[in-house]
Image (tube, rainbow, N blue to C red):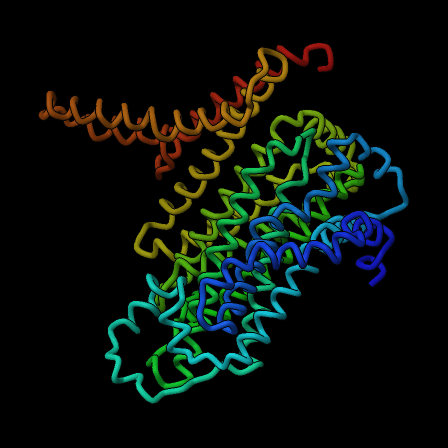
Length: 495
């Protein structure tokens, strides 16, 4: 509890609050929202709709970046060094900056949300009116289904929202908005010397994601109400692996899952910025758990476990390449890792281990089981060849990306991320496309040549993993040879 309620949190709350903020702003917002209130004949309905609109504007449109403002202000004002020298721990800074940053936003948001709950409950509005007057429900599943119903089928049915249902709906919206703010907070913590000008795009993405999730939760909650009332004949379900789950429950569980990792990830990044040693354990657990979570949505009932494991491997591959590209320019990290590995310093090896190594090991494990279960009709030896071919392609890419990073560090510096993306596009899109066009033309001109198929298979193994490990081995050896030459060229004095 002391990690959450701490001096850093208190300081950030006092920085955001003042007597004018606490008293004047609610009246100012009410004054601005008054024209919307006048647009409706029913004053209680107007209060309900206006209060929810104010809640959305305050917490989502203007509040999305509030959680990250504390750290950004520290960095922009060049006071972060004083923060690092303070006695506050990484947990205290994380919760202090985030909760303190959003405290004033949620002070206004809770007022608006309370008015929404009370006014909607007092209004006793019929669900039919909510559906037909709803902006969210017109173009989604619920709106389309209800528009098909005849008006006579709903006549005489009065289904009022209970106070418990309104509180549950408000709690779901609260969790969703907190999730959006936590995501923006995580991505707004600079890993280098970023300024706030580069954070605006992340705020927009956070607003779009949160708005979409609110609309989905609204629709799913409304569908459950209609199902309980006997108007709708089903509720939405989602297949996750071999099980069916209630769509609303699974959506909220997924939001809570990523909310936890957004806050925990923020703590890890801040801990690293405070120059503590950060091991890759948390990143590995996040990558594996997220891969298994996402892979479950790819499956429908009846698919075997092999497809799940292959999907997990593909998602882990994305995490591996992402972590590699994030760290490929940190050559000192690699040097420390190799130095401690040579000197058998186990603790230092683990502390300086690049994040892509444990995820690469995870890929190696899930991939072999995935290939075994998925390709049941394929020869076992061919499965083994394909397995090693995929791993050698990954290692080949890492070698070439390190060459690009070293040349970028010692040569003409540029945007390393774009150079890495250019390499992947050239190797996996541009060259294979030209190669296939060439083969098509050659096969047309030399129809009688029986060696075309064999040479095509051999060359295709240079661009994509196949059971032909000879091409993959050649590509890896070439990459390692060039990497060795690059290292000797630029690190001649040290080696």
